[in-house]
Image 1 (tube, rainbow, N blue to C red):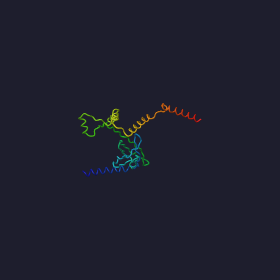
Image 2 (cartoon, helix red, strand yellow):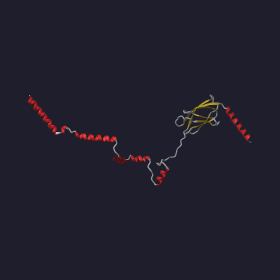
Image 3 (cartoon, one colour):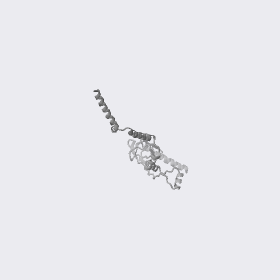
Image 4 (cartoon, helix red, strand yellow):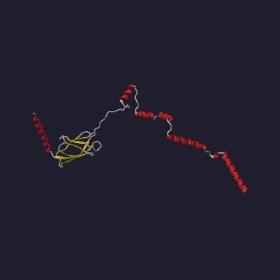
Length: 208
């Protein structure tokens, strides 16, 4: 019985091989594109479904070229795209076929994921038992940048080097502004000026 089954399988294989050998060979070439935006799909896998043994791949530009038989079914697969099957037509006159393969992108909608601010399960268990939910990084940053927090930091933190330098400049400017007075507003300066003019006139009269 085993020998009979083996002979039948061998006969079927020989018949399939003879059938494929009778079909003309075709140089099948082309470029694989994304059906949505016409960009190339690199490194796609091409499988001859009819023979089940011939497997090829496109290059980084989506180009492929290999020999197949007429009426062979070729399956194109790539990560992130739906499989596409192409059948080589019959009675090709030039024995070469150049095609454009369009593969449709496979979009997978993932469920929403919420990130919690617990590094370990022990921290989560501790906060859960204490009924205290920790703030996430965004809430912590919002509290640190609030007007009350910034005001408290200004009162408690010492001045930086840049702030101290600016404060000293402002202090010196205020001191220097009070150190110099306008001589036109000084009555003693006016008296000294009048006295110098009178003495100059007297000296000129005596010299004459």
